Image (cartoon, rainbow, N blue to C red; front, side, top):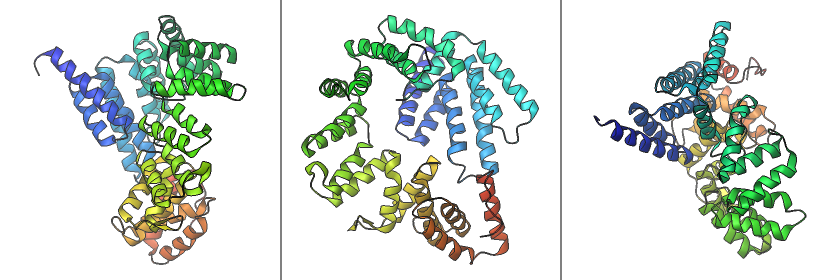
Length: 418
């Protein structure tokens, strides 16, 4: 592309689409678009591409060997350095972190990392603020590092004075959490000002803080917030509703606004009959599936088990090993949480039999072993499965399983046998 203006427009468009794909958890498409944008000269795209590789190196340790993890982290560092080369001096901060993540980092690596951080501190303030805002802009619970606050707070204060209600909301969050001085009274005044300016997030935060003492006023604030497109407010209204008709209306609105976890609440009501909801296990199972499809962490293990066993709460839904394995993988990618052992157990069963994908007896031994070690209702069943699989492996295969377990869980006594 010879026209630099057209090239930049193309890069910006590709970056925007990539960011949307990332938020929608379409990782493959996000990577493709970020690479297109970076090739066209977008430094933010190169940075996001590097950060995605870095995230994958942590979230997918369960399926990657040491060499795979190291390769991803090297790839991440390469993209982050590309962002620096494209003009984002502040990306040295990310390069510094990538250096510290190198396998068997040496004292020399630590010195190199500190030097990179020093170079990041010399970047223009506008670039440093842009990086921080990019990282926290889509979070409901922003938490910038303490050393970033001196850069961020003056910009937020100035933006708030100019009428930027997102900055007003974030100032309130930082004050309320203690990251910035002022106490709760100041946080409430920020959110009150933002709500008066029509900001949906500020209205929600204000409602949440006054709900116990002023429920009627809080409900009105939640309704204003939901009308402004803030899904968490609609979810809260569903919780507060006294009848199933009202609760369902707000939960469905929350889903429309991107809160797919509201599907869990719908499913639970349809299972228990709470608030006068009709008991409908078929629809409840679909609610769990849709919530899991949307990435709601609390639904993923339920969906994996549901499709592995072919039933939900005694209601037959038909086994679907492909879906069971996909949801189990999705849950294991989370890395932690109460549903992870259940996903590990489902994956172990799938790998042992080859349902939903290839057979991998060593993988089945590994994940049944890990699930059995956890304090979870599936632990005993996982132990029984592990003993069955372990007996079918030869000594070399058993040793590979133990070594992989030790690699994935450093510092944990994984034992020397099944």
